[in-house]
Image 1 (cartoon, rainbow, N blue to C red):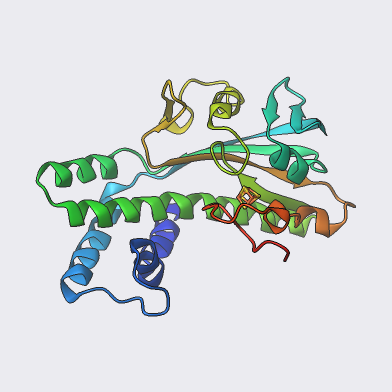
Image 2: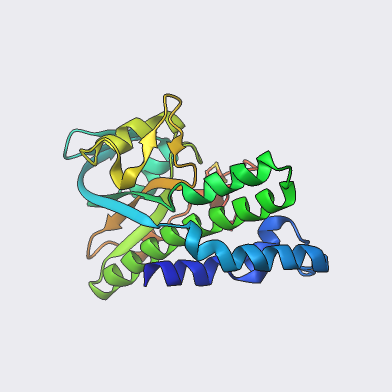
Length: 233
Ligand code: SF4
């Protein structure tokens, strides 16, 4: 079921074309490129093995740009801490589509089939993003039904949460390779098509605008690729 939903989103031709760089609004590629895209979209189900592991950790406090977790863990990031400061629980997650797609990208590269490698790599990024987005949305719906809310999600290496914080995030799972994902010495994840992150669960009775807090509205970093709202909005 999860695989089918992820595929539906990843196979959205418009989203794929935008990710491939086709100009927004025009969304056109050559007939040859479209055939290439269609070929890899058909093969995608055989190349992904979606897995997601999560754990819920009560939040003790948020102060001075840090989140202090009840299990002793600390996450350091002022915007992260500001966004989750009214949460009572932090949902930590790691997700991956496995290593097969990545291996196929490498095979394409080795045969100088760079356009194939590019299309497949982009499909892989969309698939793992879709996996995480669906997980986050499912929690949002569940929490809303209980009068609670969820915050925006954050990943180490984005916004002001340093990539080295991966270590602290992975420690929360109490296992060396949650979802089969290994952390490298430089805190990158293997398989590469993996996403780790957190979001907060905001308790019943807290103003809904707290869950909707978005630091991007107040941020002046113009070229940030992770921006989720225009500044001053
Ligand atoms: S634009 Fe948003 S995601 Fe980017 S640094 Fe600013 S607050 Fe963080």
